[in-house]
Image (cartoon, rainbow, N blue to C red; front, side, top):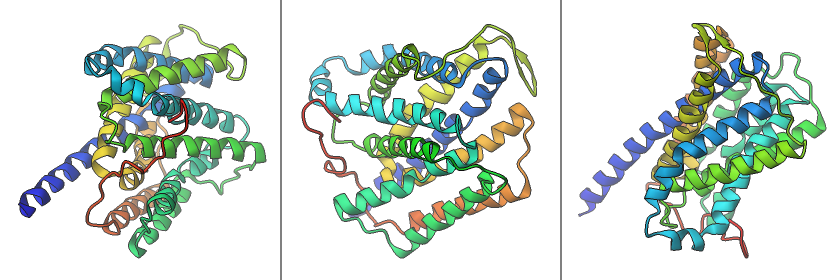
Length: 326
């Protein structure tokens, strides 16, 4: 019986890793698609808002089908779903774009991608899951790899307000991993993604309508390294592949891998972003960035080796906020 359980766990881990890498690849292409739109005159706020609405609409029907006869679960966990939409989607996107408006993108990304460390600390304080020595070494190695990949020492300017916005994006990213890993809710992954993206879309639209998030868009053709495309092609690509598919794969993988390990595997998104930046925009990573990517992968392996044998999601991993919260 023990062997059967171990085999099932191994299969779940392997499939979870495949889903996690798929999510990282999907998320990683969003920057390249969006950069083309922004070079064509779109504001970052308009690009991310359209991205979220396309994803929310794509997942609307599958979400409704997945929730047939299960609306009681939605009511029971309405607070969690709302907080997921507001923090894991809206705050993560809005805070990041506010950060890059006043500071270099590389430094903002570096701060946001400290989310795995925040996840480790939360699980340590909340569940008493003290990371092992190899896990802590892996976190440090992965962090150093990010520093090399993002090249923050090449004239990056530090703005205190920007740092605060980037920390807000980090909280949103950490919330994404912690809540995506909750399998005790009974919410199908596609439903959590669909409802969260719908709430996030509404939040970003409100931010745009109130002037917090500048909105500018057009219907000009969009140029990429491989050719010019009608504006709706990158819009659909970034919404369907880099958002809808990415969020669903991310939730599925986090439930199978656990919040901690999944958050470190997600660092491969930076590697994917560099790859798609080269394929789509001709932005070729240098040797230092390649070295950083190798360090990230080594760090991820060390984090996995430093995990407990059993890494199951605990219903208490994230507290149920009072009233209508998370």
